[in-house]
Image 1 (cartoon, rainbow, N blue to C red):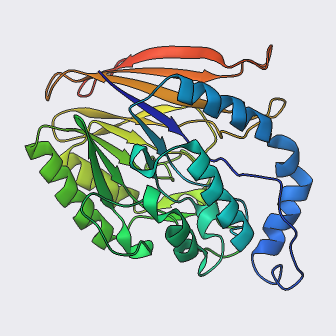
Image 2: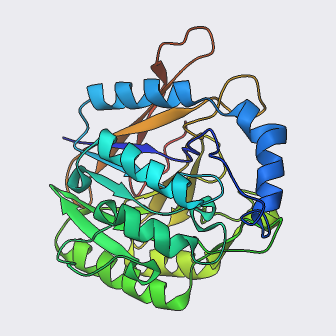
Image 3: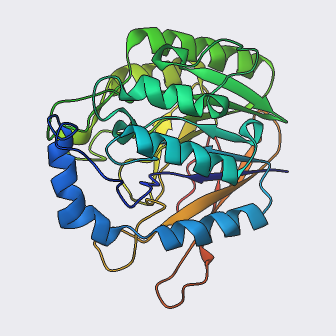
Length: 306
């Protein structure tokens, strides 16, 4: 059995000091949003409790699907690097960036340089930047394929992009991993599902993603961005593929979005007969302790109701 933990949307806080010069950009809207809403709804304490519980669960690997920071300030990116170092060794944690990690032009490359060890595909020895995606890491029977949907956008937009070049390279990884009889996990920040989020936050290139999945297949897709615990299904090469979202890891109680949790997947079987149990762990609002919130069986190729 292979145990894979998944969490997303850390939004590490609080915000560091920020100069007026740094606010002359899209950051001004994010700064206002932080002080009006996000700083109230996010809780760094729950992040600590979740990660402690996650480490105690002893997963074989951890997938983190973006939005480690808020405004992609240099000091935030460095703080996130130090936080990742505390979480675990780079070869046991795979990261893809989110829209907040690419908040303004130039930020994504800075984040990739800082977090490169956690974004480095097997056999890649060069520097990590926006062109390093997708990447693939093989751990036991699992192939983790990291896609970047992150890109700097205009104010009031949080959309993601999945373009042709990345689709072609992802397809090659899916084909290779399939030929090696591996359980293929795609990691992406934005959900590749129509209607999963509002138009200004959607993924551009969903049709391209769905076409790729239909042609080459995968066993599991993980995403963040919506701050919701969801399971959708997309058509793959040999059946339906579960697409699983997770609440923001730093989300506190008392808002319309669910409090932070993480997903734990237990993967067993072989090609054509994979079975996956999804367990969500977090705070139930009655106690600060982390506990099991739900559990369900996902079978690649079949649709199993929650």
